[in-house]
Length: 194
Image 1 (cartoon, helix red, strand yellow):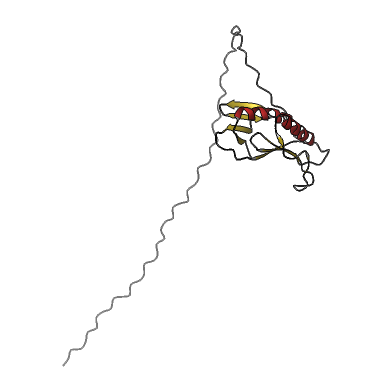
Image 2 (tube, one colour; image 1 turned 135 degrees about the vertical axis):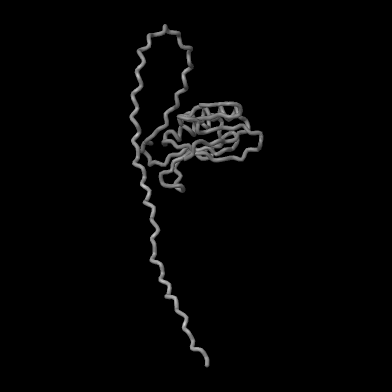
């Protein structure tokens, strides 16, 4: 599963403003930024822009959406300065229900919003715009309240022990009966020669 995608851009500020407007209909907003990097997302920053002083090699990125949102993305992207690269409509060459819209961002990246559902079908998990974290206010000091008496920690139960694994009994060497030696032969006396 892909966690995030990053596009290199030549004019970071211009690209950032473009994507703020173009991705708003998809529920995306600028969620995180640090020098030369901007992260957009609906719940977490999963689409990133990275400033580059090198020539840009255009990429293609597609965002999943319902059909009405595909149309809204297309209009918002054009209003933000994108070039048309394919008006919203069916793309049967991909599959019968593929509905998409394509635009080129200021660096020539092909950005798309698409829907794979038949007309009239509702996308199950629609993206909700992420909530911006509320600015934290310094907490007002409250008088210290009495703390309840500390509870004794619950006694721990001893861990159940596994029975010790039995080692197989050592095998005693089996004594083989000693091989019988052939009986010693008595020397035969030869008769003396006469």
